[in-house]
Image (cartoon, rainbow, N blue to C red):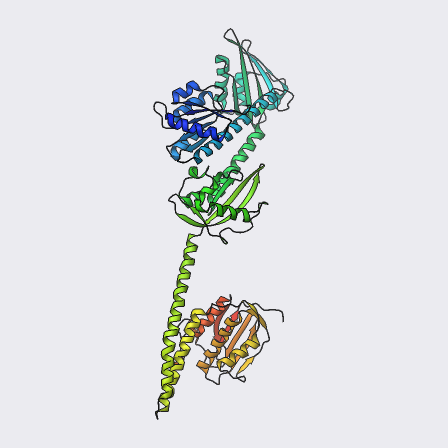
Length: 598
């Protein structure tokens, strides 16, 4: 087969090597696997026909890293995958530093062989593409009609050198300049690169070693450039007859590479600086290609452990199908972010200890260089979920408390009230006081229940006419029509039941402190409304305290009314403050109110 892939698998465990070969060949019929039982055996079996090496790390005699170093001496670009049971970031880092193409940790199960096969296929495809590209580049670079490529020749016997016009142009000198290899190195090449050039030239002249190096020059006008210079020495009877080579200005390419490197560094910095975990996976294979530090903290795994996993491995195995349906429905084919996943369906990831962590996910599909990737932002919402659970528990306890209080207190009060009606006594004043006390306790219970449940309503904000609701609230509170003055006909957006509580408690507060003859005014402000009376007023020092639970200066008061008023206002997003009315009484100003068109 034209696309056959020959793999050299080096592992001192023959049984594991056989199992690996069996799974790899099942996964891809292009694979042909040859096994070597150690590093020395691997070097002996290494031929130009090998397309990829898979090597264990811990082997007697020569370990995987030593074997890698030996391979790289003669095969600097051959795909080499370290496939080892010893999981260590230090080993992975050293392997990649020594030139390993990839690093994969052995694991139980068959998924590791599928992942290994994918890594081999991708590495070989890239190697072959680069090798084909290199062949094409060699042919192109030998074509002297390319404006930025020059050719040169040096005859060491005659100590004579020749430049094409392009070489003079690269160096920035006139064509009457006389080339001199040693002086040219000193004159044109960057001080930090001169030894590299001298060593390469010496190896060509003395040992016949061709070279291909990328170094910096400083042209005659002071311009710094990157060049790629190549040489092919030709020997006769053990003596160098000539050295022919090319030189190309690669400054633009180097700048592009530097820009790409800076962009990658910038992108990785952005990823690592993100507060949420980020995962980038191949849209076709599902393999995770990139992640960030927040992801390592979320999962309790290193970046090396995460990259290469299938994206489904992040989630509980039993929910893989359900999650796939969620992503398919909400992550549109156009790549848009339709919704925040996790608001409609409970989603979770699994950390290294197997614990499920609730997450909220923003996901999209993006296209880069013709390839599609799934990009997901995962936010840990454990704290939020715990707060929601605690709030539900508190609400449940509050409901239970309100029910108990309402039931256990009202029944004795009803019994007491009925019993008072049966009592015959000449002390009418004491009897009236008993009835008043019962009525006050009823109000206290009503206010307790109202305080606990004032936020529970089935109504939605809607237009409410202030004069109509104010007058209706006055009637239920016992404020006479003559005592109430409404100076506005404004309509506001509010929840009517809550707003009624606000008016009733403000009116009751005015009567409590000003008596039944108190006068009350409801009027409009620029961004709200006010309720004022002509009663005794509120001392300046007390105006911030009146909204606290239990605060009351009246023997008839319960200390809940104004706190309920404040909570109703805040539930609407309004602000409230206590001040003095024009008549010296109390004035309550409610602001931040939304008005409808008159």
